Length: 139
Image (cartoon, rainbow, N blue to C red):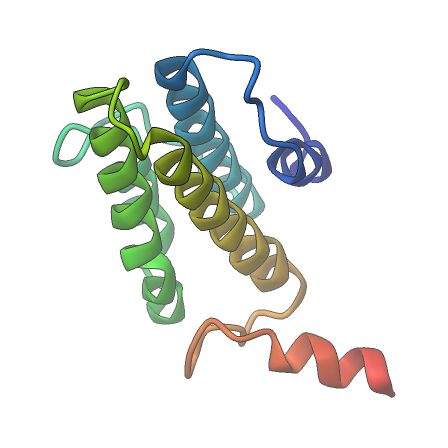
């Protein structure tokens, strides 16, 4: 399994050298990897099930059980799946590069939320802002 830090580093570097479908698949896989880390941090075995055709959504559902603040990233997961569908439905679309960049940014948002939540459990109780992390860094 890829470390959470390696996932963040890979999300920092766009992979324009890969075909659009492969880039989208890798970004979705990185999102799943983030949620696998969340499940393992909660001492759960990450699910292999799918929800609405996506393992990512099943992993989110698993991670949200008993953790209401984790629902803050539900729409982020759904948006990642949406952009995956956009790219894979028409990899030759004139805006595929923009769609892939949006997908990368959404995956990065998921990574930042989950990695922050693993540090500060209350993150996400009001929104997914990292205010608790910023305040802790200032003290």
